[in-house]
Image 1 (tube, rainbow, N blue to C red):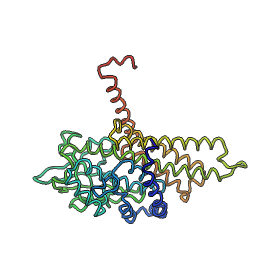
Image 2 (cartoon, rainbow, N blue to C red):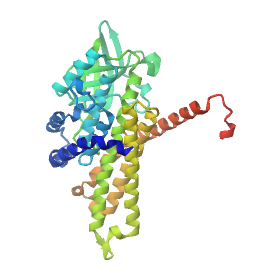
Image 3 (cartoon, helix red, strand yellow):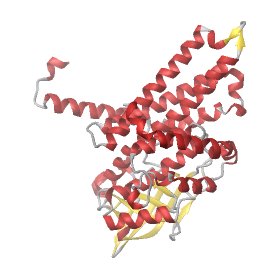
Image 4 (spheres, helix red, strand yellow):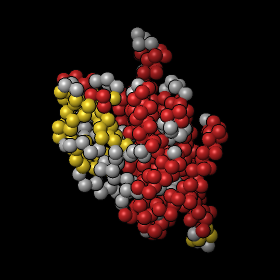
Length: 394
């Protein structure tokens, strides 16, 4: 599967050059100031990174999930926060690409590209995280407008975004089938953002609580049809999860590189610690886990790009596996550096904090395991038939 990435080598090399020259000098400052990097957002727009999923004919860049993953991985090697900027921008753009008609899509994509609009995705609520169907925000139709009321939590890009994709119940009696999606502009009366969350990682890219009090939205800002919101949200996350896997992969690769170089230089017991058997086992496991995660991430991207079966399964697999790998490798890398790994100057403690968040957002890893199991059962039911006597398989 990795061989299929050969055609993307010019993109990969170009991103690496840009990251080294532009992102790397700013990474620590962004982490320490925790201020949104407007200059980097503008530069990413200039490079096409924040419109990567928008097709070229609509003014975008490349338009496929594999390119999206490559960007997320390469930027995350130096700054997971700036990788998140690319991810959340794409998550906020995907519903527009998936469900609007051609006229709407052309107009909205043109606005994003030419006005360099920052996007946000409002799904999670204080009482609705993994259980999306239990969200309580409502959208009440009045003539040719909807009134939005409720709160959204952990909204990435909250407070800096120009447009918010918001999920609310237009028919609360129907549960998840009553959820609809809306495109909301930042300056509407009744929309307020709390102070940004003080996160352990992914600093510089804010998240916050966004409150809606009788926010009036035109009916033509409904994305898709009423009741399609849950499906839109799930299909969006299905397409973006490989990029979270890629982001985690970049974090893990960076940590392994630091740990390996340190082990080759650090001498104890009269030789480099990389020559110690226990250390070699740790390095070998790191390398193997990274290669496994990379294969899963780009297999999922390939399946999504080509509309192949089982894409949902691979998407969930790669997200939870790669983020678990990132958490393990960053923790082990800190262990290899010992006391040096606990110093902020090593950058490893930052990668470990960033890795933790990849296990949580875009659907917790526990939920991803549930998705994989459900998809697996569905495949076996289709393969063996639902009317079979299952005693032979138990």
